[in-house]
Image: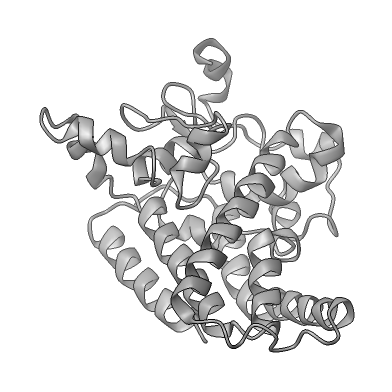
Length: 284
């Protein structure tokens, strides 16, 4: 099942709406344009195809008699079971990536994932800001790839489509959930729902720092109950103080091509830091 066409169409509609409402005006640096543009071009055309070939080869090697073995299973329970498995695995892979900020053994994983968090803005283009090697390590690709090999291509496609569409909702600049959360009658019920499903506000908080920023919380893509179960749930009151990662930013080439490209720390630190970075320590 091809999912990229529908995702691209929905992305284009949300992006056009954001642009028409002025949500992209004056927020990009030259490096942002290079990172977003090259990632959006190379990920679907090159790296996801290569990752797909690698995963297909691994599935055939590890399960030589397994091709199509689960094709007889009905679609709905296969979709639900696969969705839950993918979300659980992604939660832990995503959490370990962030723990790489303080755990040397996982530093490489954080540097691959950091590209997605480095943008100092929040809109649907952030979904395209993905290091080229993320497709090789993200559990979603491996689990859905093995599902396709085992004969559950339709279920895998629907899972990927669901996740991508939910990502568009939670990364969009529009925060329709803020008004519901503050509503005197609906707010309590909505906060209850946020213990089950990730809202835009919760994921915006994950991309922020300072007041109501919590990049060390809300690791799930869709199912907030995973964060609730494992003690990483954060329900915000509003937008985070800042988006992005505090401190000097890596070279744009490292953001895209790490670990193939590694720029010396002295060169990275020579870049311009966000003016709010010096204040962040006082706020954190």
